[in-house]
Image (cartoon, rainbow, N blue to C red; front, side):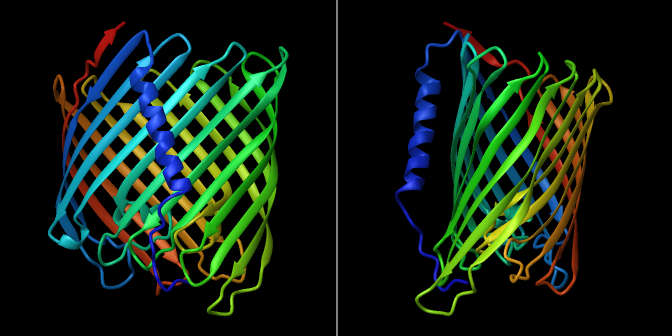
Length: 400
């Protein structure tokens, strides 16, 4: 769908960066009751027998990564802010996958007398080696640069003891440096009514809307989605919480081009589903999430995406812990005439052991699978990671 990849600068992307700067400045300048600083260093060795996750012509890599995360946070009676930053440097025997990545994320939470407000903004600069497993499934023979700017906010307020309103808006701008992908922008929002059924459960009825824009190639694609959702959030106990939202949406997609004959405009229906369960015990915790909704991709159009995430953590001893993760999904174009379906799954096993007060060693095994309709068959990969981690247990904290 594309001929050239011209980077667009200005407008919404600059707005994202401006909001990020505002959140960062707020986090630094706010008169908080407590400030904290957390930092660390992670050194990884990695071996992957099929880094591009292709059925044929597999490429294996080995090499190392150095990650330097820093987190600054403020806390007061009503206002909490945080700024998380990380620089990652990756070097491999296949130099095409080398990458120097940066990630900066800011968050702000404010508690009202009868509600809450939240804002976030971020800028992430990484590569297709890390981004595309959850997106197109196409990594490429080299790691191409990907830049993602995000901004958003949400809030809720009770006008009476039981009834109130809720709403939220999120924006994402993704830019690729490879002609194999399409840049895009995506805006999603919701708004509606909430009812505080009891102290632990809140009911929801809300409208849903999103807009996808891709004018990066020879065909301009614009998709607008409208729908509704209903469900609840519930904290049944201090250890167990659950949430459920279900609904339906209609997506109208317009294709336009001055150089080629575009596909016909399309209107399709999609399931909206968000469900989650979280359980905590003294030695273990379990989180499960299911999600279905129209989602953007670098393939150049909007996709109906269905995903499952499971995370289990068990504290084996005072010094060691075990993690098990499962990610799975299926996606197909909202326009049924576009044939580019994809199924994928990833299983992660990890064991951490504390060798000293602030030092850890970790081993991780990762199995990945995908089946792309436009590929010649199923693809599998096995990856092993060995890590040395420096992570001070005691935060640097100070008070006003």
